[in-house]
Image (tube, rainbow, N blue to C red):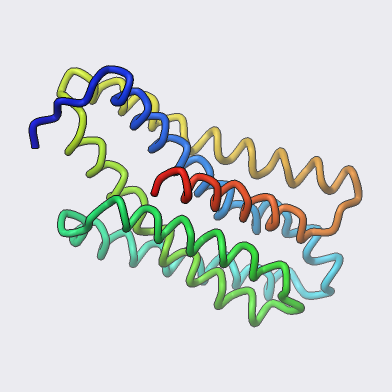
Length: 185
């Protein structure tokens, strides 16, 4: 690839990759961030609630290995949009769950789809940015974990303080992830 994007388009691509991974963190950490509210409102044990995170972890970990190897074959325009849109739908579906059993299988799927993102975003940046822009992209992308964690836990704390139902964080995550998926596509 020629990597001849203008400065403005390069900066927008970096921002878009940053936004995609930041909101992905909101759509993956919101369960853990609202677990206390979930425990109190659906009446389950800590052990059962922890299985949801475990299901995500196993799907995400295995998916990272698989997608890391396969991502060079992906059309990232579609793989990122599909992964984000799937996470959007899964977050929305979580609001209809009445128990942990359905949550753990949905969160497993969320882990599988979210595992597509990192390697696809890095591939997008390396394929489209001039070498002189890559160091900036690396620096910006390094802030996604902190930013997404801050937003997920901050929103969960705010919604808890305002006595909102635990589902609110999933609605908000669905909106944020869906908006970035649409913007990406």
